[in-house]
Image 1 (cartoon, rainbow, N blue to C red):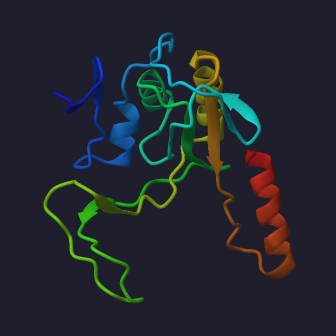
Image 2 (spheres, helix red, strand yellow):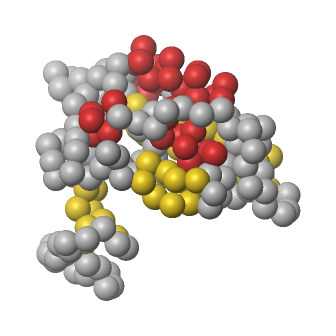
Amino acid sequence: MLPLIEHRDHQMQKYRTDKTWEWNLQNAPAPVQVDTVPSLNGRWNWCGIPVRSPMGISAGPLLNSGWILQYAAAGFDILVYKTVRSVARACYDLPNLVPVEVSSLKEAGSIVPEKSEMSGSWAVSFGMPSVTPEAWQKDIQRTKSMLASGQVLVVSVVATAAPSLEGEAALEQLADDFADCA
């Protein structure tokens, strides 16, 4: 059984830190049409785009449409789709999401102690994995079509460098790769 988070009037599926990124991607919440979302008084804009609220969520847990639509239904209106690339790329091995104890900023090179439970801060190292462009492009279109009016989908994009290039050619290739993804 998947762990759930109680939120408002419904339960939300929780990202399984004991499972891989790929497992969480394949076991996402069932996508839902976002119809009724709790309202927040006021008029809000994000980058000049009208949104229902300033409530947003970063790309971390939003791996695909299932995850995004779960948070959209919970009232988040600025949703960041997990980083995509021009090529498929595997995630780093577990553990890649570890709870840590951070009481204040430390000096460079300091060791941050690990905690036993997820509360507060965590260290994340996924390695910016991505499914194929065909898969994420199709999923993004699906996601956009299911969001409610006043909700914005932001897509996190990263370029993938060609290891065989150097200097100016490497920079041009990297810029072209980013533009192709965006």
